[in-house]
Length: 147
Image 1: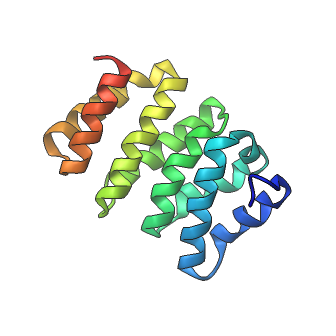
Image 2 (image 1 turned 45 degrees about the vertical axis):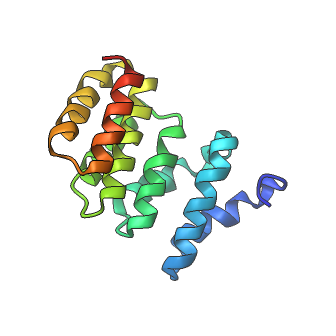
């Protein structure tokens, strides 16, 4: 619906702050899908999304934000904040959040070559100490970044 009527994107974004965790989760999922097709729709909400990335506690919100936020055009300082949040997500109790954080960090490293060394190190550490899902994703991402 939002892809057909992008003027409704604001409503979708606002729902990620809803009191109901199910609404937040569904809004984050839809935002991830819409922004995959039209990442420019995220631009007006960068500040809010960066704040939510740092503050979100809900597992489902975190893993979707880890996929969404790397689609933003970030300044160097913003990128460092996002990397710090993603590294914090690597400590999450949820394997899904940790796995999406690996993906998010890799997506950032594709845009910013200066991050590649650090991200490769994180991926290599995940091959040793991560969950099965993290190990599988880390293998895939290391290949994509080029060993």
